[in-house]
Image (tube, rainbow, N blue to C red; front, side, top):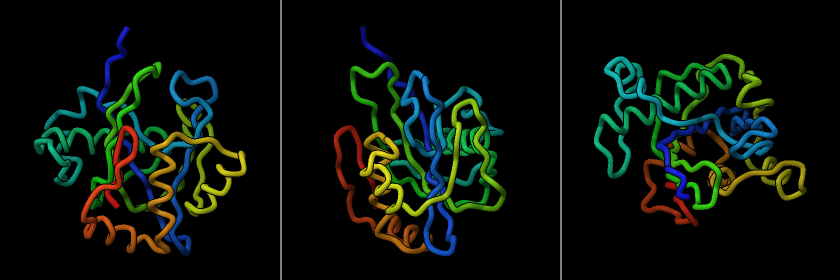
Length: 194
């Protein structure tokens, strides 16, 4: 039986603390999808993400291969899910599109997920205790070390974005890299743009 692929979006939130840190969340153990693993805030696109009101809440964005309305729905879904899961309101942008991953066949749930980069705009991140049970700021390199040591577990896209961010010491450098990305680093089931 084939599992349908649902459109989804995730936001990789970064902040200088004082060097580049990324917001990491841990999924609720026992979740049907990636239970107990570390992720970035995000989730599926809902019908309300396609409305005029939703488009008005986010700045114009570009997603390779998609029309403006579809790109806006994806960005709105990522911004909405970030607010729901960790309580952070993101409105200022820019929100560069930094990658796309499709959950491989055989998974209990499948998503075609687009990823956006965002600056922390203030406020305290707090896990909603529904999707995420913990949330924290950490240097990408530290998170990768913790995964390598077996303290944390992550899926391939999370690791790929952490590796891409780990080479930057400041938020501005990560955003600049999205502007000059000449290609896409290809991975199984996805790519990263910087």
